[in-house]
Length: 135
Ligand code: FES
Image 1 (cartoon, rainbow, N blue to C red):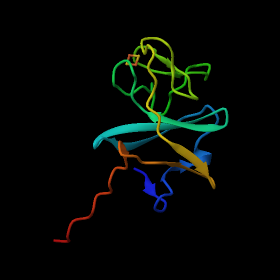
Image 2: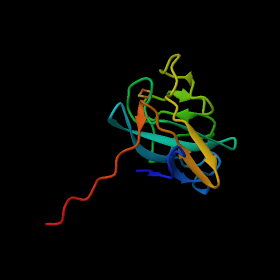
Image 3: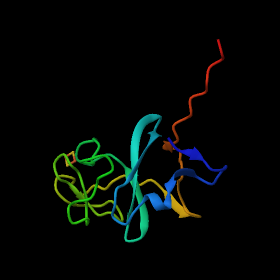
């Protein structure tokens, strides 16, 4: 779950230092059209990229271990199910059964040592559970 930094400032994903170059991705929960989905953010060539964790081939999560999305050469985002390969910078399919599709991007920005994502009409934060009245 992410926390709101301030209105209009985006939702905090993680600290910049949590994303090593071509390292383990940060995975978080959000809602797409009100339904739970997961997204991931990773650092590639110095920039943070984020996508929904959902393969174009079959709508399933792609990481082969939690947060592990890149192939052995750390060049492509690789779906662990049937091996679809995606270009990290734009999410475009470059091989395997994903055809001409591309991953669904999640708008992110890195500033002041934090990574933020930006909700839209389609992608919204998971609401915090409000504690019920004390009984
Ligand atoms: S589900 Fe990703 S390649 Fe088939």
